[in-house]
Image 1 (spheres, helix red, strand yellow):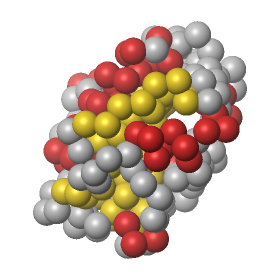
Image 2 (cartoon, one colour):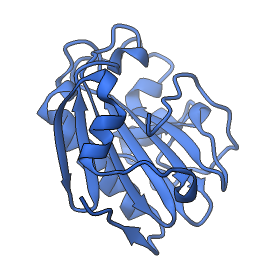
Image 3 (cartoon, helix red, strand yellow):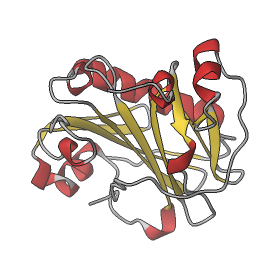
Length: 201
């Protein structure tokens, strides 16, 4: 696989909270929610679409790469019981580009994840996207097998993004693709973009 799916909560150094919306601020009171977090110093910053927070307990950071898991901010409230069919879980993984030689075109991603049965692929705007029919249920209980993945390169790092949902969740369909694009835009906007690499087909 191009990206290793980390299914557990990874330990990481605490990262400060910045510019939380009112919903995000409420979730942050439990100290687990972050609006953004440094994954690779001066290179890659994790941030999510509106309404999503980083679970601080999931963070892994450093020059060698890192990981972050994002959920709806309200889901990090101590009173939250279930995720819900209208929302999703997002993940980000960063690896130094020199350590990852696999292509990041949609065709390359589809080949890398062929065991999860690619059913859609698209390359454009510096990001490649695939939809997979299987494998999404490995992350969460009662998860939907169908899920989305994307890959992009910037600042010398290969960034893998993914969108998962509960079984029957709307993010397994076109809403998941839109959410994935919003996720990528949030990461690019938050990161100090110095070098953006687009891999040709």
